[in-house]
Image (tube, rainbow, N blue to C red):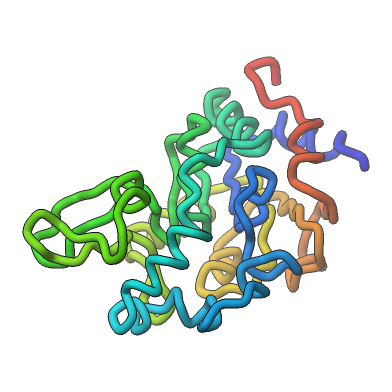
Length: 242
């Protein structure tokens, strides 16, 4: 694997944006969705894609929360080398934004600040009656259906199937991608819309794609690495010396 071409582009660039999916966090022990060991291949009473839909949440909240606590609420996970190197690039003034499809908050845990969370975050939860805030630990430690002190049911601030992405987050992500001179896309199949459609707003000099399996955008990439994100970012110099 030749990392020199990417290293040169990182040195030359002044406005880098990273667009990432579930593959960013698999090296932190968080399962993705579509790999052989992913959530979509696990056996429950209902298919996972049904369980994490808005209508299922409303109709079967206890079953939703059983799955959510077991498979999606990974509060003990730690940032991996990719999260850490991206945070270093932001500190160095190179990386201007991260656009993520993940809900685990690991980018922020690694030190990144400019993060657009397209699908929300497990660390934010709100009462559906009074709007009171609850953190992820409260949900993890609760039993059955988590309830607010007012009695209302608490909902995670994550975008479930059948619901739209947050307009403000989408606008910010599109603006960041449109202003980037280098867009690095990693750990995503680029099959989930509308998130994958955001790549059309990139007008910069170079598109870099890092993913273990092929994606529909491979032919459009200026640099293509079909390997793990950790192997690429682990070899990349990201500190102030660049």
